[in-house]
Image 1 (cartoon, rainbow, N blue to C red):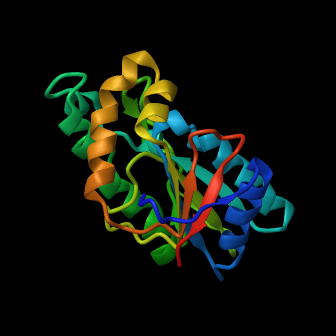
Image 2: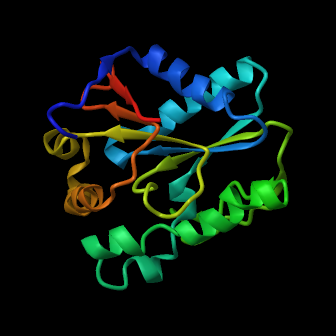
Length: 207
């Protein structure tokens, strides 16, 4: 984020309202990315946006990227703390594209979960039908720059210091991978959120 980038301070409720507004502006079914490292805890924001949309009559569900991890045999092939594996092998973005992003448009169905990360086995979920005007909020790390055709993109940005502070000690090996990925991706999100202090977010609207 450059020095001249202009951000508008907001509140957590204001951020929920802003993301909800972007979702409501999409006609028909919509797939929305909330791109954020685990240290930013994107799921609570996704859940709050989902609740807001449902209150406004729009069907909505949340998909966690951690339900689209690859099996441990692939994730840990080069060790449990290999940053290249984390950037390239950890999450099954291809399956996410096939079972969620494209499937809701081509088949009007989507798969809530692919893999149980804790049990390291198939989540044994079946595809579910999409309601008219269905919104799916996909929350997790490194979503942008994967050729995933999202209708709306939101990025929660943590500076390096905040990323280190908010990442549990046993997961800090992921920080270099996240920083490198962020430096390599040039995709501009629709909403870029400065999220070092979640009670005081600041937003810059892209397109």
